[in-house]
Amino acid sequence: MDVFSDPLNREVYLTGFLWILKLTLAGGVGALVLGVLLAAMRVSPVPVLRAFGTAWVNIFRNTPLTLIIFFCYFGLFSTLGVSFSDDIDLNNFWLGVTGLSVYTAAFVCEAIRSGINTVPAGQAEAARAIGMTFRQTLTMIILPQAGRAVIAPLGSIIIALCKNATIVGTIGLMESSNAMKELINANGDAVVPIFLVFAGTFAIVLIPTGYAFGWLANRLAVKR
Amino acid sequence: MTTDAVLYDHPGPRAKARNRILTVAFGVLLLALLYWIYRKFDEKGQWAGALWEPFTESSTWTDYILPGLWHTLEAAAVGAVLSLVFGVIFAVGRLSDHWWIRWPAGAVVEFFRAVPLLLMMFFIFFGVPYLTEEPMSIFWAVVIGLTLYNGSVLAEAFRAGVRAVPAGQSEAAYAIGMRKGQVMGHILIPQAARAMLPVIVSQLVVLVKDTALGYIISYNELLQLGVNNVAANFGNVVQAAIVAAVIYIIVNSILTAFAGWLSRRTRRSGKAPRATGRGVVMGATDPGMGGGGGATTTL
Image (cartoon, rainbow over all chains, first blue to last red):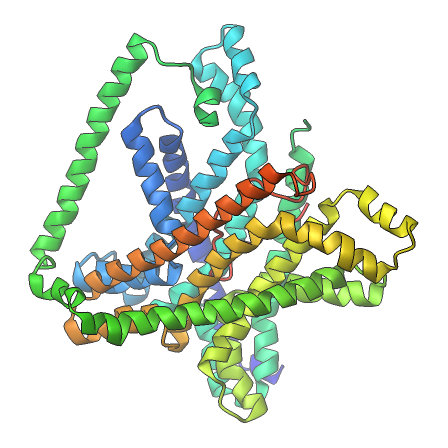
């Protein structure tokens, strides 16, 4: 562990994971907002909205995230001149957040949609039969049940988003995987400890998070 | 459409009128967005024929795109076979009766599922050569990374599948005198594999998408050859990225459709065990997130 007694190396490690944290938070918010909107479109009675939602999901779910992030930098920024900030790191950060949000939103949309699908049609029919309005049916009957079914898939999406944030390193952000690469190249004699610290950080944070979401989903599951 | 049935009634005259207004409003918005993108491209001269022309020439395809696609599929195929082997071994390990097999197997699976695939590939490609003092082959760095991650995900899927086989199956097998290995090999795994087949195929989509990570360690796959190198020669990065994206989407849509077909077929033929109660997740045939993502929470 000699490598990490050097404050400079600790700095590299910390900034790396700080970027991952920021990317996960910003990307998560973007993906949730966009994903909910897309899900609303996909279940709406308007064909144009449905088609737009479906197209979005099919395009972004089947394209590698690496290609999307690559396009955000070389396409959006370099060629089309879309820029978020004059600071190189901040600009790359927001380009990365754009790519992560656009990609992850497709999965959020599908998770929410399948959550709505787990609610038996009889529930809504019963609600309408006792005279509830559309808004009442949605907010009092459907969403409370769908929301519980969505916890587990949303949990895995957030965990995946956190791991996918490393891909933003492709466009030069010094996030954890680039930080590890730098430390490995500078300290060839301590390759294994470096890897174990970086991978261990992810494992220590993400494995309990996964179990917590599983526990929560089980606890709140609608028993049918 | 079950969603429709849950959310709203058949539209009456008022709802129909409202839907029409929404259709027009959103249609106009969508056209405006498309026009804005068109203008943005136009401003930067991205519609210039010279930028699109390379894709009409056969040499672009034979020199860059097709070899790239071939390397992508090659890594995905080898990775898939190895992941399956890895998955079966560790699923059986996690189901073992002996704690000294079960715990290490569980630790390995949980660890590789939690570590980002890119971090793994960086370690294999940049770190392992320091240990072995030999250069690492890029192909194997990509394939080993893919295998460790996707194998772990598949191990969890297999385990869920085996646990979803009704208990009566293994009880009956033990009753007629089969040994543990026989019960697993002859009774449980064949049924679990059949039930999990769609999940396995949709994991292939993740594998194909994840090969693009190989670009970052400069493996000659579709993103490297078809986008990076084409753009370096013709200066058309936007166009090349669009063409590559379309190729990825086609390949993955075929795999997804295949997974959906398999899923419908196993359900119809009734050969799959009644595994829908737990373990088998809804929408299991949808492509996962990949990129070292898509951890499934096990029930």
